[in-house]
Length: 307
Image 1 (cartoon, rainbow, N blue to C red):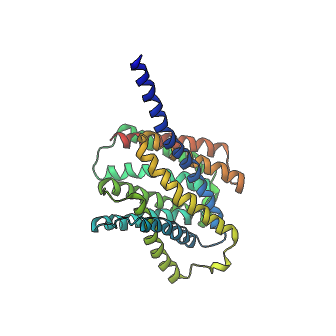
Image 2: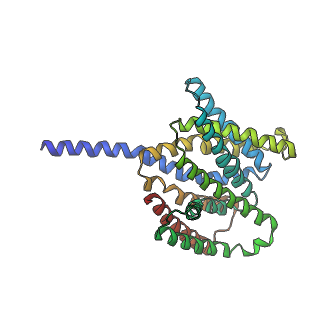
Image 3: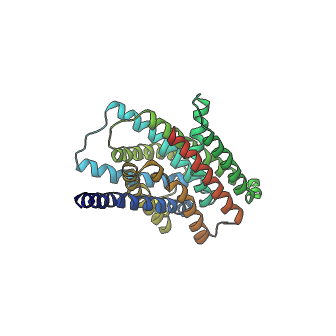
């Protein structure tokens, strides 16, 4: 009887331990899906890169203020190098270009393209001479077929230069996100990941602000409508702060196979709300193509984690 009592207590503790990380995963799956909607709404009324600057500035300030109050240690020279590289790959290029891209394509399509970054990891690994498993190759083929099905409904849109430009920006954004994933894997440091995120946001927003100021791609803050400010606030609170906290927490407390499930749910959330709020296309071919693509991504992710 004592054995069963101990076993029952162990099960209760495991349920309690898994409960909060699982809620964090649900939070990530929903809110990162909706950030595509907020970005789409925000860029309707202001330059996309200005929205990126404002989002990253306020998000970075929140992180930095917290760690300054806590008197947290600052990065070492090697940690600063990682932070600088990741600020370029993650926030200047990946986040910046994906936000810019969604100005010209639907939020749902942007989310689907954003989810395929693991394909780049496999391709990059192949050209670096690393062994690629049959599961990864099969996943690549399935994803390619799924993407072809999705774009069947968008064939006429390719006649529009802005649509093509949005696709190119979105694809480059996924490539730089894959590069950052590989870089993190090969250059790990023990620096606080939340403090690192805040510094990455601030560095990137300063750099992007310098570029858009020199090119004149800004509008006066007084001319930005309230709906865009609400979009920025949503992106800061839910996209840059709370959901990143939940993301890192889920990574630390859930198995990798479980913590990566958000990547398959985010596009579905974006497609659904894009259809409801913006009347974006949600046809049978897009739905089927999306499911096929996510199936291929599942195989690719499984192969990456196994290797």
